[in-house]
Length: 359
Image (cartoon, rainbow, N blue to C red; front, side):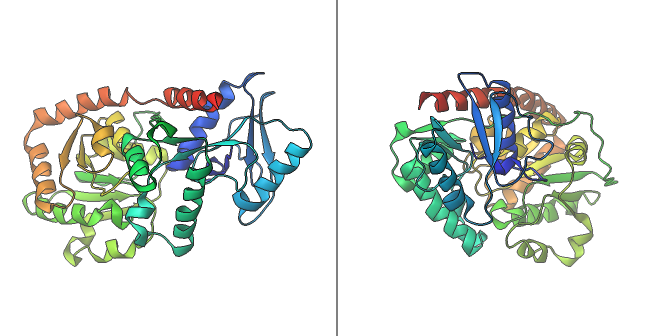
């Protein structure tokens, strides 16, 4: 398995996915199901510890690691008798000319639908290397039915080659976390990378209208800067900027504290492969308003208020509805608790391992 996505300091998205699978595999490694985890550099302290049947191997190489250095290592080891059954890549890219069967996980196809949000180098890799992985892999894992549907549509892949394995959800700190970030006013919360496809401008415009009737409210945007972030900053009217708070990347404890104290969480995205922040908010008893787009209704189920992501007035209307209806708020919180029970890393790990051992 390629474990590099988990071997980073700040873990979000695919890094969390990879780390959780590593933990599951380490716990379930046996004499008959053994794991070698390939890394560019030594494993960080928060990766699961080695055991007799779960080992790390560091393969040096600065650039094109998965395309040159790793495959060379795999071929060399095979010639000297290392017997691997399957190679698993948890994120889009597989080793070039891999001498073993491969399984790859595809998280979303945002690079096809929103190419302007990617640096040219990253876009080239996503387009070319993902296409190669899809063609050469014996099995493909999609993190939602929406991603599977997109793969069939865009790459004409046989349906029986793709298995849907939902991401899990597991809180990483106490549900009673208290954020050190004191907002001092009721606030609407967004969590995610700051980039155009997240549709934050619609959220800001809706907030501006909502605030006219509820001047005490603020909008808190949590997440690291993404590609083209400046267009989001510049779209905020001068008179509103003191009420829109950008926190940047924050710790899990701080983020979870913000969820617990928020009026609501809004995910206005135009496209998501899965949407873990929906489940994070539900766990922390934070009502969710979500765009009705891509995989979000699939993941949110009946536990969200949905709006048209292209309609400022629709989102503003949902904010007003939630503000004026306390019973609706309680209902969404209860439905959210039920919804998160459908997603677990134990289930995701077992289903992934089943696919790997069938190869």
